[in-house]
Image 1 (cartoon, rainbow, N blue to C red):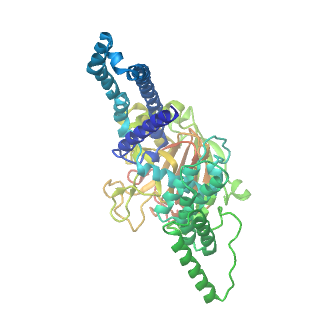
Image 2 (image 1 turned 30 degrees about the vertical axis):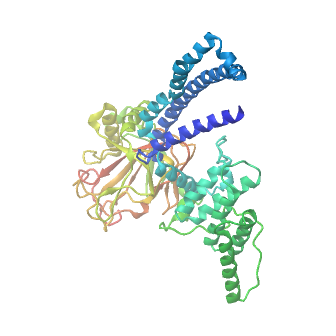
Image 3 (image 1 turned 60 degrees about the vertical axis):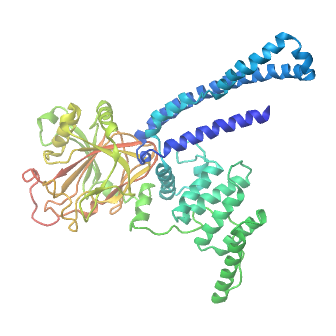
Length: 544
């Protein structure tokens, strides 16, 4: 009976896995780039679990009926086979045998052929277009690695759900850590592969059960460590692999190659063999490879709240005030609260600039239209997606809803700049590890055609609305002068991207730090040069 139950459960799991795999192959990716859209998947999964339970209940009911038949016929055949002729000598038994084989066994066959899975499959088919695919899983894995780097979190902290200021039961199993390592390995990212494969090995050594074998973990880990240039440790790990599986296809050859290579290096450097460190591999054991971003270290330090250049002298030059937009009629009776965030370049924050009702309406309008956020190719001027910008965005016109029109008017009143030539209100929601690495909002001299199609000149200023609080991470940082601006729901920040001369202010290169915990919603208005000639007149020098 136990074997039957296990076999039935295996059948159910195999069936569900097959349907899930089929569904995932037919969907588009980039769900992971928006927490707002990912929340829908929570309710989808809940509905599918309910559908799965109904399927299991139907299977159990069917199996119970089949078992009842089997028990009845088992008792009957024990009697009939003991004395077949004597049994059939009774005319009723002879009749019932004919009836069973002609009718009742056919009914049993029909019962066995019934497929209770039809309703579940139908439900899955409805939802399959919204399922994440392999690209989403890979993107989410790389997002965890990005968070690991930015906030200097070791793999063990992640695997146990220990994030700064957050208590959670979200944990990563041995198999989860192994899959993380494989994702990095397949991308030739051996730095992160080592960190996650080592964590998988540690949890397995500590007694945690897993589907993946220790031999598989050691296979990937030893080669990744070799790629990081640590031959002694690669040899030690490969020896462990050979001890576990002496017939492993690659282990013996790799071990000989590693040993020969190490001996050659030691001879060339005239050094003696040093056994590998007994310290476990962890964050900081190996150096993270350099990438395309020159200010990577300072940018990530600011995201962690380190290296902020807010001195007492600078703080003394920051003030708060009531702002009426130079006696703008709409602000006279209710001026906005203005706070200085930075003195030079001048960055200000406006408090209570969006109500909760306005925030929810903007999110409601944007959510159905969210699409992967794009950046403008500096050479072609064409919008395209990029790995350094992980979010989804939507563009809203003032005519679509009175709330959008009201927000646009408020931006014009507060800044004193016309929004007639501004871009549409852009709404963005950041996904798993969502970020926008250091960038300029304005176009530089090497990309003169960036906004040519708009015909409204360069991006003069940026007005950024924070539409959610963020539990951890998600700051707006300016690496050039060490400023950090933390998200606060209902507030807005404003700065000029150009000097009065029209020259770009390169100090305004900024970034949206990865969201560590929470869902970050923002909306922004990029205000252009045209129409501002009398609202913000030119200065007398290049940097006025």
